[in-house]
Image (cartoon, rainbow, N blue to C red):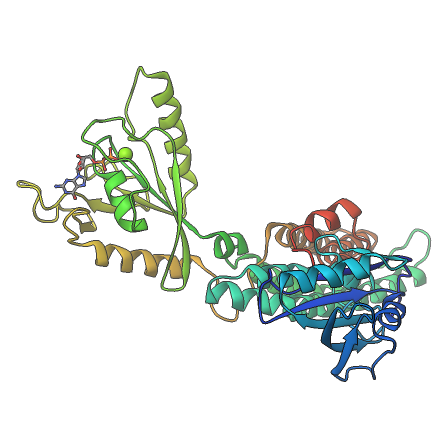
Length: 428
Ligand SMILES: Nc1nc2c(ncn2[C@@H]2O[C@H](COP(=O)(O)OP(=O)(O)O)[C@@H](O)[C@H]2O)c(=O)[nH]1
Ligand SMILES: [Mg+2]
């Protein structure tokens, strides 16, 4: 393993905001041991929890200390964990004492994980999973993040990469034996490797995206003005988030509200009623409504039968009003947002539709960056499959391998790393 030497030793509070029962401050880098020597007078046995006194005059705290010597630590560097009493003043005093030591500074967001990545302790796909794990709120999000963080994707990528290297080696051997103007047709068995690989990669690309899992299934409520969209929206999100009035054109802008139902993240979107209008502002609202309906994962349509966009859930609203009882032919469901009729049925419909839009258990959902790299890999493999001679096959296989390396961050570019690691909190 290559250890990236860095002069700076970092520290940060890695547990939640104090006050709390305990607070964990981590110190990582070449001066971690020295700082412990300085503050506690000695260094404990590696990986043995040891009670120590920090500071002499004055005593800062009695703490539990863990020492993980590099490279077998989570960052790959010498790492010290101080389990303090979790009061604000205790944490502040210990942080101040650490900051005063030579070579130590406060960590940037995600810097511990970034060092772990730099030292080969985890790859980019695993780091992204870890980031998602820390923000996971639903069971589905946790499961997916855990699979990524534990290297499920990375292991598949390593396996694909090894297969590509074998195929490339077989081809290079053919090329080496070839005469100047007699390149052999035979691909040395590369084709037999490429087809199943492509199948596997395309199957993974068909899994619903992680963004939908992470940010929520987007449910837009649309229809003509005064249909009851805002009232239904308020009913679904459980509060008066949108203004609902008998005046047509009340809702102008999009209103989004995230809600968790049955452990599934949804984002409900209330929209302006679709109509021709002279009002400049309302017209912008109508354009936005149209865009929101076009890009939603699920549309709840409150308009007349026959006017619903394709695939929409056609809801017959205000079914408590005289003359509106019953379910019109072609509608999926009648609801009364004010009376509550049909609301439970609507929610279960949303949950069942939502389930089909999310990755199933055991599937790995990828974020856009990962999907793009994998799609590039698939494109290169398709080129290799259709290539007229083995020189082109060899070149396409190189392209496929480079795409996989981008996925795991090998030869990764700095701005990309900045973007990914800055999503982490300080102390991670
Ligand atoms: N009786 C009844 N009135 C409703 C219901 N939903 C909405 N309304 C009324 O219909 C009018 C228009 O509702 P609103 O939600 O603002 O419609 P939007 O323009 O589609 O957003 C308001 O006066 C609401 O109180 C309902 O389920 N039952
Ligand atoms: Mg409205």
